[in-house]
Length: 222
Length: 227
Image (cartoon, rainbow over all chains, first blue to last red; front, top):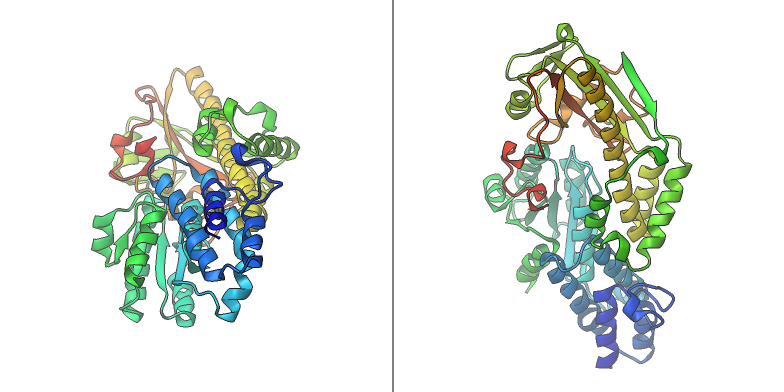
C-alpha cells in the first residue's frame, strides 16, 4: 500500500499525469497519477490516505522546490495537473464525506489587476494540500469577496496583486472585508507587497510564495 | 499622426531569454512537452492577423510637462514623480499601444482555466513575448524618427509600474481616437486583449536610453529585481 502512495507522491512531485504523458522524461512509459490513484482505490486504500499520504506530500515537495527556485511555474502546473487528474477519482469520496478537505480558501486578483499566474499557483498548491478553493478570478472587487464569504463564512481569503498601483485596492478590500468579517483570515501576496505592507493594511499574513500560504493555513487548522 | 501597424509573427524577434527563463529550461534543452507546446504556439502565432501596434509622436507644441504631470494635446497624464522626472528633458513624447492580439490572449486564458494549463502558460509567456516584441519594433521606429531629427529616446514606461496609476490609461487611450489596434479598456482600466502593453517614450536632444534601472522604483520586493 505504502509503495503505491509513495509512487503517487512521486507522480505529483514530478508532474506525471498518466502513462501516456511524455513528461517527465525520466518517467516515460510508467504509470501516472491517474492509474496509480485508481489502483490504490481498487486495492482498498482509504480515499483520505490517498489524499493525505499520497497526493499531499508530493504537492508539498513541489511547493518547497518552487520556493527554493529548484522548479519553475510549468513544473508546478504539471504537478497540479497530475494532482487534479488524481482528484477526479477522489471526488465521490469527498461528496460522500468519506474524505474531508482541511478548509475553504477564497482567492482572487484584486480590482484593477489582471495578473493571475501567481494567484493560480496559490490556488493549485492549496488544492493539492487538501483545501477547497473558491477562485474568484481577476479584477475582483469587495462585493465578490463578501458574496463568497457569505456562502463560505469559515473560509480564509487570499488577495493577489502584481501592479504597484493596485496595492491601494488591496488595502481597501482588506479593510472592507474585515469590517464585515473581522475574524476572517486575510492573506496577501504578489510581487509588489511584503510583510510590512500586510501589517499596515490590516491583513493577517503575507506569503512570499504559494507554499507559505499552505503553511500559514495549516498552522491555523492544526 | 496616429500609426496603426499590423505585424506578422515572422517579423517579430521574440526574446528567447525571457521565454527560457519563464519556462525554466534552456531553449535547446527543453524536455517534452515543452518543445511541442512551443511549436504549437508558434503555429498559432503564425496564423493570426491581430498582432498590432499603434503609436503617435507629439511635437513640443503638443507636449508639456510640469514635473508632476504631462499634458499631451491638452490631455493630462499623471505618471507620477518618478516617470515624469525621467521624461523631464524630453521635448517630444511618443505614446504607444501594442497587442499580441485577441486570438492568443483568449486561447491562453481558455487553456489556463481548464483544458491544458501547461500549454496555457506556455502560450501566456509567448503572448507576453509577442507584445514586448511589438513594443520593441515600435520603439525602433520611434527611435529612427527621433534620430532623423537629431534626437534620442528614453526608456519606455507603462501605467501600472513605477506608481503610474492604470486609471490613466483612459486618458492615454483617448488620445488614439479609436486607433488602438483593437485594444479596449475595462471600467477599471484593464486592457483587453490581456496580452497588451501601453506606455510612453520621451524624445529629445538631451535624453538617453538606459539599461533597465530598478533604482527608479521604490518596490524593494518586486520580482523584477530578482531577474
